[in-house]
Amino acid sequence: MCDVPMKQSSDEMVPYTAGVKTLKLKNSMRGINYYKTLIDIMRCLDTANVVQNVKRGIEYVVQVPAEYQAGLDAGQYSVLSGKDGRQWATLYEVLPNGKHSFACNMPIKPEELVQGNPIHDVSMNMQMMAMQQQLAKLTELVQDTYEAVKRIEQDQTDDRVGKLRAGKEGMEQAILIADPVQRRIAIGNAQQLLLEARGQIGETLKSKIQSFPSIPKSLVQQFFGRLSSSSYFSSKDAAFDAIQEYFQLYLLATKLLADSYYYLGETKAAEKTYRDALTFVKSLDFTNVKTLRNIHPREDMSDTICSMAEPYVLNERDKSIQLAKPYDTVEILMTGDEILEVLDNGR
Image (cartoon, rainbow, N blue to C red; front, side, top):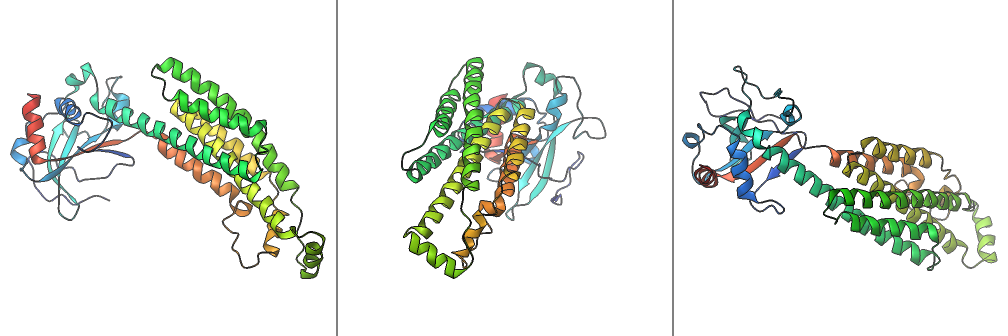
């Protein structure tokens, strides 16, 4: 939603519109040299109108469009063009109610971008950092689920789970490699292990689902089942827990594999990873597993994999796609004092 501009300006007024995916920079952010980044970005902007519109002690947002970056190398500028053909960033005052009041435009100076595009650089660096953090987080989740499977299987995990662990550890090491060529090779090796492990884990998952015994609805039949085995109910719960954990392993392997492809810019491979996962989960027959509700009639199983296997995969796919999307807008949050200081230091 656009905020209503509240201040007149001699420049063409641009109402505030939030970006689809916005990188928000502020002084407390880790991973960047904040003031150097501000000076570099301000160097690319015509700040002639800034001083007269900025007040000390007031908070501002500088909004810089990122869409024009794609056409930058080709010498084309296509977004946020005013009537005179200029492209600009925009300065907004942040009001107490959180809305944004137009202050002034800061036309982008194409001639300054010949020496480099700091807006593109900082957005890409933060994008890659976010994806590296996601890969690191996923490897931790894989480890946690791996430990859960070991407990369920009483440490009798086989090569298929061990291969996933090897792929996970390979990915952990790969994203720490500084050399981009060697990092890409190491990620590729880890991906191969993950691909093989996911296939084998999927087969184990399918086998456990197919071997799950149908539980009779009749209380009489259940009674005789308990007479034949004191663990009649608990064994069914344990089997279901194992199915859930193996599905979690399969899903994490899928996500780690797909996100690593997105990290390398291999979009088609990432998309295929999720397509294959959806095809696989659609092939699973949970008919017998669903009979578990016969011994737990009061429990809600609507959010288990019996009903939600496909939605779980789709949800992770959507999150991966969103993470991989480039930022379309960069917003820099700063005070009027910081703006004036940056302008003084950049001269």
